[in-house]
Length: 353
Ligand code: MRU
Image 1 (cartoon, rainbow, N blue to C red):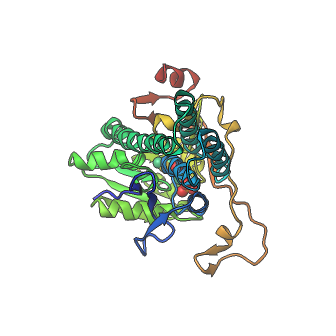
Image 2: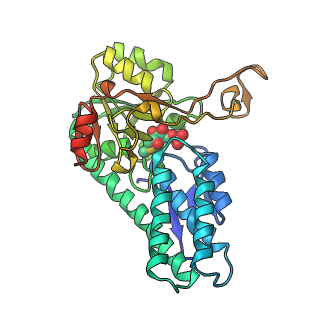
């Protein structure tokens, strides 16, 4: 069984339903978002998370923003509301480009619809916005499946795979990116073992990836982040595969904090390092990873694990949520379009030609 992280329920007066990832693995609870503020909060607090899922959630957030308008206020007023909600949702998390791409796409569609239908009722514009959000959601599902199919040949029978954070179904509207590759290999009957990095500070690896892989019947072992090097040294890892939050034009890749260290370790041990991501995660307007904004999160995420305090009160904390893996540390990027071997400005450009 592959879990579905989020879905829209109903028509233009409907709501966004998400699996509350803050409560996994202890509780499987669904959260109903009925206002744009609830979507913002769900994104900010990681109830919904993972680059593609953020884009889908934000797109539906715009539908909820338009529900606030009562009566037929006209398309101009509705477009203003949409633009305000875009700015608001865009301020939730800065790193995953999918969020901004989805917001821009829905807003552009609303503007296009308004220009083409001057006298349209607000309700019709709301329907156009919902249709576009639904299209982004459905496309993501397809992209995930194709990534899995394109990446599956890299998983050899008997392989040991190390992954970091959660790039599974919970992070997308489909079956994930890095984990999609594993799901497809599993479907083909390949036997392999996965090491899931715990992924401090918010434990997406042990809480979410381990949970998803267990649900799917895949052999998974949780390790602390600081065990990766020793696992590699002992020859226990054949390949590393992660997702991505934003990939620059030269192939530099932002992903969950700790990914960079893994790439260095993989290189030092001669282990291939794969990144699996949809085309919607590429930001070709950004030349290199240095231009990717890195989110810094609350100090208490490090000072506490759950309710337990693990650092002195008031101690200084540095808590970047992402890091950037340079393209030269990446063996291959697997996308919905195929693969980019030895990512560089030239090979990325060729892939998107
Ligand atoms: O802070 P998160 O949990 O949103 O970070 C998620 C990741 O870093 C994932 O690896 C990335 O978004 C890829 S998800 C398919």
